[in-house]
Image 1 (cartoon, one colour):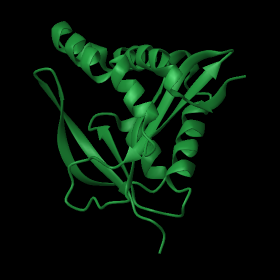
Image 2: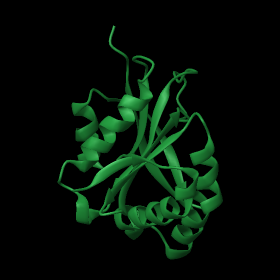
Image 3: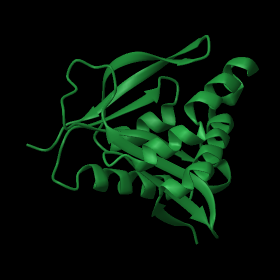
Image 4: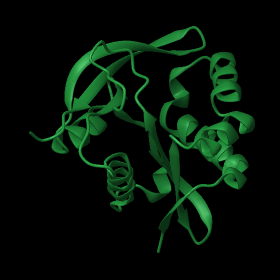
Length: 172
């Protein structure tokens, strides 16, 4: 039975490897090999993962099956390029589960873990960036109250992905 636990700085190598694997599995077919390799080397560098894991404003969780990491989620202050982003807004930064462990509800459990952490001090605006062609993720987030409020480009080497900015406002 898989479990979810908060990652620590010691998990940086595992997180780096898993982040690369899940990105390749999900999106790797979309990019020229040299662009993909450069992106992965930079974005998921072990030292960058250590910085994120050590930062008090960020949190990362690992989904583990028999002690092996098969998914991860990350959250922190919103860094999306939208004029309505305010200090104190949170962002789901990453949510990936290896295909071998999808369709078992674990992505939803990771998502709930992230939202609970982001709203631990009470409701607040939460943001998500999602690839414009990832219709399944868009439907998933829409069911949780997120709405498309903007667009931006996400660079992977020379490729620029069209991304949607999704937002969920706190209840009034």
